[in-house]
Image (cartoon, rainbow over all chains, first blue to last red):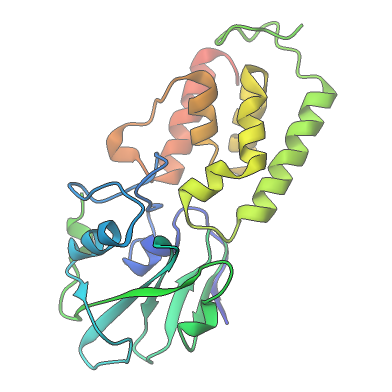
Length: 134
Length: 111
């Protein structure tokens, strides 16, 4: 289900991080990447990027009251996409520079384009340090 | 007459063939990468690489495309011109990067 029109100011990683002001990617500058996080296209770097805004590795994609979750997709170990969980338990994704969509499951976006879910991260809903990013 | 030196704009001849070829590549790139978030995949797309390969004569056209239709042409412009007017703090801020490159283009006489 489409939830927002296309917008090339931000991508899926930015959307998952709650930032609609910048395009996030570790390499192929000029894209934004959190300071002091390795500019590498691997899951470790993505995990560190989200750790900067309070997330940590999580073992389940199931909805948990009081927690915000992000899922990172990867193909052959390289991150391709990020999605963020909503209060409904469903997920929201920005499709490249195209639209935002809502999807019931993470598996709905798995496949040729994005690969499969490789990492789940969560943080307490009381945290919102995106504005502290530099 | 096409110029072979970066920065010289008075004699750049943006022939219809060049503009048409660029337009086709831009359309293809937009269509085939609109759903991709990876900046790496986007710039390594064959159409984007071919745009870079067209060299300095497309700089004014690319700047006009940026001005009129937006798009992430920053990497291509930087590769072709070997310049990067975008500051570290503005990296990823697409509207700001667009403005910075358009100002660069005006200062160089491309726009």
